[in-house]
Length: 185
Image: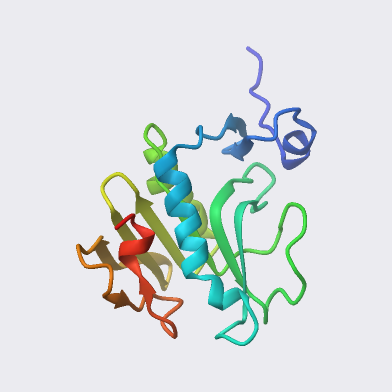
């Protein structure tokens, strides 16, 4: 019987297809981008824009579609991830090895297990302080916060009918965001 060879970050970097990620030692294709996913990802990045710019609350690097090498056999490509500039003074480049301070995944049909279990446990193990999950079709956002060794849910929100009601969500409480805009209101 032949042993299964787990792929590494080096294997991922050498792969000819760029729309792949490394999950549990396997190089897997990322889901096809859907309209709902793209709109929510862009809206989230826009709403959190003040945190990346000077003159506002600043202090963050927020990136979309960014690969983070957590372990030899784990290098997911996050929909959005953020690092406090106090921990990462220089702009993110290439595959990042520093654990993010915040990750947001937009759940894709057929990939729910990866986002809600596999990545949740990986991020929890690497002590990522905040994890957001967004279901664009259902217009739901779940906010997890690391508490001790485990995540706890601090908010489960649905898109309001009135997009004028901003909400303050960790770790971005200093500037309320328009949840209706993010979730397609």
